[in-house]
Length: 399
Image (cartoon, rainbow, N blue to C red):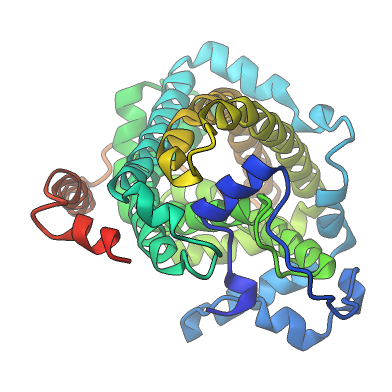
């Protein structure tokens, strides 16, 4: 695994929280670049993940956006009061008129919370003596791979309802703009035909988000300051670049077409989108820091001196309390404001370009995506309930 792709695993994260500092070595390291400008083009290309050839233009677009000073400054302005740029007025007024928006936010919160709790269960399947026998992050690599694969499945399971109910929020906006009645049933009727593309998009975006969150947690870090800053710029470039994807999907466009439409949307509304993204990101950063601080008492409570392996699973289980609280604030309040403002900007973009859109009255049904989602749910339940029978516990015990 390339060094730039390494993320701190559960063992190193918990250990760094317990000790108050990440694992380090005493070997002096050569001077490394501290600003993005000092990175070479090869350094930047090496930070791109592997993608199929057809997706290469997406990486190119992401690198181009990451070069914009406004994108690079998003991560440097967390301490400023950016709440005014979030423009909560429209979203809150719409939420008071169309209260199903809060239902959609609640369902997304439930999906994320259940996904996290499902992931923590694998930590209980690994015996304490296995954790206690680990001395370095490299020793934990095999366990981290198993947990990463399990996390990928959990993110995918959460991505389906998150995608559907995010689309429902967007559908509420467009129905309201067209003077039509918005109900839970109608929004679902409009969103479910887009299930496949919504699922694929939110699974991809969810996984990118999870990896970025993990990269921000102290651990055995090998990246330079310049690489950290550029990675943040790439992440923000991705988020800005996909700003028009969800609104495009809401009105029925496909994955590729939505991506192309998003590029044009961002080009015409770059300043507004970056300000909106910076405001949303800044508030999420504050919640993330508060969550990290709130986790300390839980870690201290379970750190009884008998070894981190005896308490690791319980630590991750109980820090679900501050995590779920923060996710609740995001899903019930911040995310609806962000998505509805993006949809409002997108409506202005359509009007400016003389594009007329009418949501269909009787969209086609979508069954195949629901069937595959149900199969994945069954697969997760089989792994959960029959982990001993299929030999998974034995494998995790002998790593």
